[in-house]
Length: 332
Image 1 (cartoon, rainbow, N blue to C red):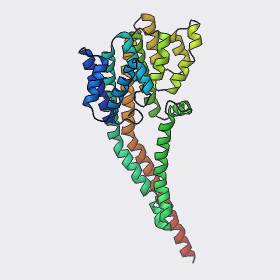
Image 2: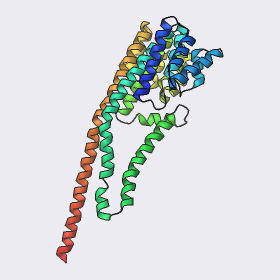
Image 3: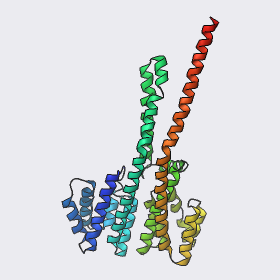
Image 4: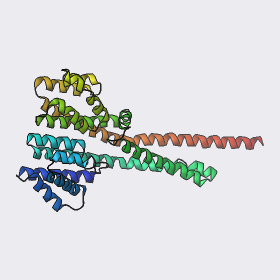
């Protein structure tokens, strides 16, 4: 589920977290709540997650330790960070409620993005099959036509699958691809905003749970899902031990935007860091999904421009061929 989540997957995970939060708030133990959800569910990732957590609890592990053992395929970094914060603060029900809201927001926004992407994808596929048609008509080579049309689409699908695979947490090229995607217009900014949102949510929860800020930063960086942020924060341990403040390191890193740097510094100085992080999390979440929706809305215009340029080139090419043929006939 975590690798390729659909809106339906995300809504199901949101419902799971919401039900777990309600049962914990009503006074049920975590194990009893998980057993109830496991008995009520069919063979879904949530049922397997419940059974895996129950098995871990039976072996004496905490919920966060059981999640760590299950790995990233069953629960992301944000899940593990918030659950650990909930255990330490005694607010596990609130953390599951926050995760439910997070997954529901993701589901709603990704459904809107997918809806907006249907037409651009249709245009792309039509263009892939229409563009080589004139060459096929002139040459009659059907194999060349299929290689140009299907070959283009298969190449694009392969590139997308390879990118998703390389972005897995364990892949050695993840950092390089993550940095390269930052240069993609709109997409890079949207991914950065969503990573900052996850970072801020995790930081706020961990600090509210009483976790030391020096310990909270590496955990929140892993929860962000950004290899760049994780790498930068991993290099902070020596300066933190030497007395540098996180606000100074955030400002000097060159990774965080000015608005984040200023808000974090203001929160650290004023003693209202948790409130500032909560505000930053909401703001970056809204900005990230807004840019993703904007990308989906403007993609058709980009494809239209490509198709228009291709049509003009083909018309000029055909006109040039006819004029050349006419010139040879006149010469004869």
